[in-house]
Image 1 (cartoon, helix red, strand yellow):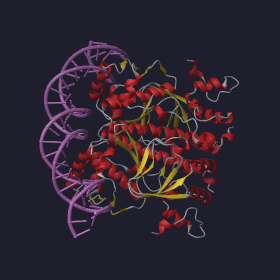
Image 2: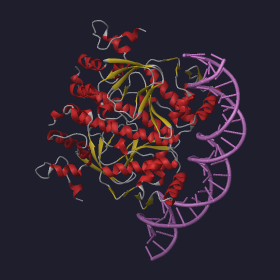
Image 3: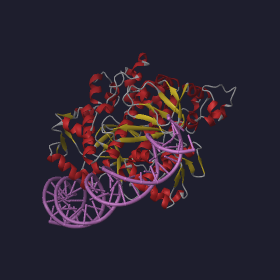
Image 4: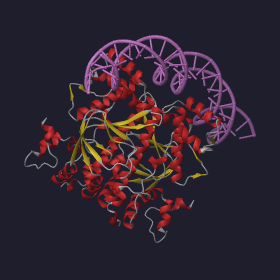
Length: 270
Length: 270
DNA sequence: CGGTGTGTTGAAAGGTGTCAATGCTAGTGG
DNA sequence: CCACTAGCATTGACACCTTTCAACACACCG
């Protein structure tokens, strides 16, 4: 549990900076896109000031109230969702360690969605005005943050396709595979098995289905040996077969190795 | 048709800069968020170099091929969509005058979706590396571009809700009202009536329905006096009633007047 | 003039939702 | 240690929204 004791902004005198990278999913994400100079690393670390913990099933912020903070997820699963007046609920997206939450706060008074923790979670609370500062201090990091937005849009786009044009089996399979890929990038998958804290209720609200139908589909998938699912853990016995059913291609989750942003201004690494 | 003859980067000596703002949906969009200095205006104008026209139902770029350009829409409707292997199609989003297309190109080799024109359209073609330059030249504009991304995410979020949790009637109503609001901001609505070039086929691919069902629902809506729809024109006789059915609130389309981004660094207007 | 794209309608099939009841497990408090 | 509750998973029967398949009308266009 040494990870948990790492302090924000810790000097590299105390902890090898490389080691810190490996343990901090937020900075690690940036290094997959850009080579970071030490000044840039310091700026990113500087964002991570206040650390807050939330229990499972706890609202982080609500679409009803003004949002004065941005967050960076250190650990835990968070759902962004919207509520309809009659109680219907739709989950828009999931945020995992390293993801940012509520960047909206930079340009909007109220967020476009509400958020709740799925599991117990710890977040870095960031002042949105500090984020604006970052845009002025390091244009390279600004583009990287834009990339985070682009990636999230890509995820939402896939989400739209699976809700709109896939049946229950396909869309559940696709959701499982997406989360699998994202967790794998975080080093949270071992042997195609991973923590999967979503209840059937949540899956239903994610894919626009009912709990009952999710249950039936999940049972069928278990029966067919497509998944093994119990005790909040998911196992994918035959990745290829599941992938085929879902029509899943993880490309939209992975950063390109050679986009313009990595080439241009590469000499300004600081 | 004077609008069409305005040249990019035109000097304010020739055309009052205010007038130019009013005619250019891209720059106009920025002015709703930020007060622009003349240098910033020049940077934005500088982006709009090559102007290209496309006929209706024409692909602008495809998810299969590398994307080397970003676009700014001057006029026309463009659909972002994805194709599944078996031919199913899902429209992710619509882009209207003033919107940007393919910002992905800044950070990705291949775009996350394909695009096609709905109507005949004219676009400004922008070099994505020039966009990167913009991040370095004007952090304020960079944040504004981020805001464009945030707004698009908000639109996609609403889209997810209407596909996932709304029935055909609700989601069609919601789509109509969203487009109505967006067109209204562009000054393209007169008396709750507006050009509506979507075929029932396209509506179906947008909302994850079938053409047949869209047709039936649309007929029912016409029968109830909810809409008047013919000849590519849409009329909303009773806005309040349609709004109620759709559960529509245009807040997610409108920029806040006082977000942090407009306050901080306001002294750096140049 | 025929072809193509779009809109329209009917009948039947099917996926998904609704309602309702039950079982199971973990946690709580007495 | 045992009721008791809350949350989640599971199942059956039935209704309904939506799809599928098929056919036809209409306008536009080369």
